Length: 540
Ligand code: FAD
Image (tube, rainbow, N blue to C red; front, side, top):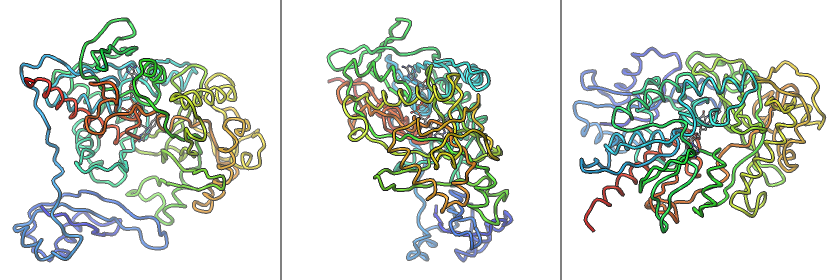
């Protein structure tokens, strides 16, 4: 198999042109090219003055790959294709009686459970929230009727925090074993669009993600696994630095010497329990800020020029960063083209925002978090849980500013820059449900954050025309950008630094940031659990 990179074709090229381009690039006759697949397709929109083209990475097979590779030995764009197949590291023996426990059924827990099940280890998943169908109803009750269900919402329940999301499936984590490919293949097997395997910035969207997750749950069950909803873990059974099992909120116990902790970043009560049980936890940096909304058509025009609205390109995205004079980095986070801002709290009396979209990305507005990095040394020193406490305080302030009914505080960018409360909207209509209350957002976050954002927004306006327009809407607050703690693990065994058999994983433990990286971490941890279980079966 050969990998051909940097093959450019015009945006509107007919399908057949791709084969012709490969033949031409490699000087092959038609019958010498046996097969090819698109490994990746991207486009470069940085220079709007030039034509935007698709750039392909192609995996192909010829009648004589060795000869072709030899002919192009000095061409860095023609190389042997890497083996991206996934190979399970273990098979559970028939005599195995112990079952691993996975806490949390977000992307990390989902992939940990799926891989364990595929290797025959029959995991038991404990998820505090409800299944996708019930969870969707509960979440809509907050968005439509101001009614929060603390155990079933945007953060908690089947599919985890990524369920109501843009479903962006890319990440910058190093992935030498191509676990990301396995994640994508499993999503496609469960009904995600095939294009996620090759487009450079794949996304699924909320609606499709819900059915994908339900299908993956069915596979885990068919392989002998078990998923228990409404099952919050409230304590650990520990014995001399080793895990023996977990205690559920109803007081029942479940015994296992292998427990995966895939909690997500919002399980504050569980973080407190872990700290009380002296499981090693440390505070880690995260970011806070607001969500910003603009018309998607404005972003398309600024990013794609004459190609704005092109069917093949879809709604445009952006990524921005500004280093403020006060030493803070301000950056865009979780940008959702053609989407909506969502109420993402899991706790009563608190307000927090995030963004989501459907697969089509056809909503009126583009939204993104505009956030400022904060860290324990400077901003929340002391206890490992100081970041959690800061988030709680800020989300309470946002709740009050929003009118104490889960509406979110909001302000126009022009008023924010002039430090005056907003009183009326302009052309940009905020999409946040159940609604916004206009105010002065300077009261919502620490001064150094506001100062850095006031500097960054006009700077972003120089990169994307109109970004700092007067009537762009800021909605607050964005405070759960990543976990405020790390549940530190040994890099070799992936077990907690001080509890044997406990595997902190995914975003909540500080080892992932996003759906794809959480899925990848779930696979890594599943492998570590399986290998350790096999080792424990060996006679000592
Ligand atoms: P989570 O998905 O948070 O899952 C943790 C699970 O553990 C939850 O279901 C929770 O109920 C359960 N749990 C917690 N405590 C307990 C307990 N004590 N007992 C039992 N169960 C427990 N990322 C992207 O890559 N692309 C996007 O487009 C994107 N959009 C997002 C949009 C929104 C609205 C949100 C909220 C997040 C978005 N993210 C996105 C982030 C992404 O969802 C997370 O990074 C990812 O879900 C983390 O996966 P995880 O499995 O580690 O944790």
